[in-house]
Length: 447
Image (cartoon, rainbow, N blue to C red; front, side, top):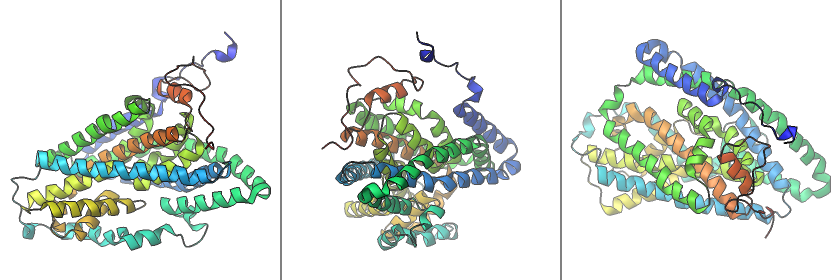
């Protein structure tokens, strides 16, 4: 065996990020439970880590998309990838809404509560309702266009970064030879930016510890008992959606969703601890490239998916809306439910970059469908934080699956690299060809 083929010794388990994050979550939960006041005071640690990650998200998305598009031989590929990604997002986002609706009918989580709308504290949700105007169609369309070319890079609106990056990438590709120095500079800039991402990820356990300690300290474990049926139904529905629906999609595309989850375990634990899928966005983009997905596909699908492919949020929206209707004895006809579904399809697409997006999107949806009382959202305000983790995890897994699927559709997936990554083989070791997963993938820009 050649010396370079010998795998390096594995670092001890306690040096792996996923172990450190998991340990931090356990310690944070214990602190929040036994010392609630101290646990609640840990909130700045979680908030600071989220701000650190958001600081780097804009440059990561911009560089990935621009370098990917400018390197394409044919620009029509950009439109094709985007169209296929949007078709995938629209289908599965709608399916998630329908699944939430069906489960609410089957489980009836709010039946028998007989809550009077007049008895609810409407002030508790007034702040979320006031923010819901941001998710109207007009506001959503205007929000995509930034104030200046550079302003998205200093803001936190993913859609604006995506919009500017795509336009700049196309312009750079059309420039031809004169644009090569700029493209070379941006390609060289990718390495230090992702190096910075790795540095920031060292603080992930601290952020996860602070976020989970605050959550348990403020709301307590016992808060789950009040609405355990709704929370349990949502978690079970999300689990079945991932394992059955996304699992079937993954199997049709030649990979295992369970292996993909194992491959992304560190990122998933980070999402769980921080209750934010954005915290793992840079790492997801890097890992999907390592798993054989072409950079242009990753650069387009992942950021777009964070705005348009919110499976967990969609399940939550219809399930929570029908829970409120059942709890307040509000009868919804089939027409009302179809209207709710259609409005949710539109409002869920505007949730990117809005703090508390799931809850605010639900407020926006109920505001347009007046049959369901918006004040009923006060019923789920206490446990929304606990459902937020599940929403983020489901959204994250859905976007990872979407990236592999779209890359395969485009012939831009190195199946050998995907198999090695999902099987946990170290980078740099070449596995024997597996006829089921390997081959000569087509060039990304092939017709």
